[in-house]
Length: 473
Image 1: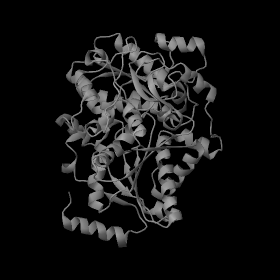
Image 2: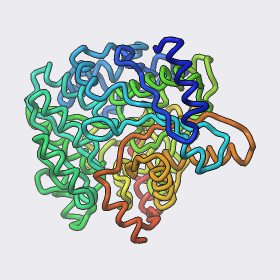
Image 3: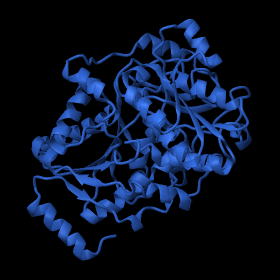
Image 4: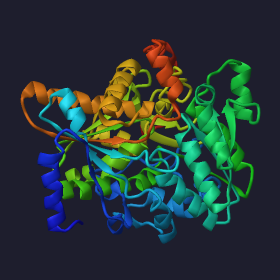
């Protein structure tokens, strides 16, 4: 923590000298969290267990061993409140952590709102997003177990480039199956992965049975995260020296991201503020969990009553329109069944630019919290999110990734509500990454070529009709 005098200096700057400038709230490196926070320790009701799709029975650690190192499997099922961050992982984190928290003074002025708006900026990482927070420990634990190669999927490429970065640190080969529409839209993300030494393949591909089956049925398939997951899992399961790494959805992935919210709590203490509302974009759930879970934990323990808003794309509305049921995490049905909000594992979302949010399912933990009423899901369309992102960039000087635009939109909506109500409130959102590799999306936006692509409701209905039959649903 800062000394009292330093807090007073910050307060003076905040309230007088820099009223129209953003304020950067820096957490000293020595105060970076030493443990990840496990929200499973505070849940009122436990999560439904993952099931073996063949038997319908709960799976055990041995069932996941072909895909993940045992330490990550133990984290996946842990109910301990805190899990220590290995020293070597913390040393690597120090390249960009603690990440800055900003007070968005210029945005507040542009909106003419009485609300205070803060954002935690994760775009300072080597890959430009929050994803290395879990890529680094996943690579570390795999290296500790003697793994030589990792396979994974990626949507917009933030996760793929982050795992490529982590793999380069620990000397691991990395194969990335990138959703084909994003592979075509975002060539610089591919180049970044290759710069770190990874191999990037457009999915569906002809390298796997899963990919070939999709191409046979739909030769011009734009791909989906579910398809890319199938390809990566299939290859990992075939080799003893290879494991699979996932960038979102699973408990251990969300666990690693909680360093974001823990830092934010300390930074807001320095600023002398407490959030009334927290906003995060949601696709699989990782960055949303990172910013919100430490605060939700305080709510669950009766220490606060912070409003938590999960923003998703209206053209892939998993939380707001999906069914809470057991489903496969991939299109090829190679994964265990998990209980989550889903649009059906065969659903292929439209090719909108927020590729990291184009997933048919939602994290079981995030889904569980939605069912328990601990979070408020909402959705917005593509163009209005880009409108918000450009307004933010003009005010704050940071161009958000298309995924992060959803959180920006949610925060602006809350700030304008405060204006209409004539009430002050403190809003915190996670700016989970910059948009420097997403300029084609902004080129399309300024040319008027972005549209609000509606998803096919009949395709969702068909996908949901084919949900696996599980007696405990």
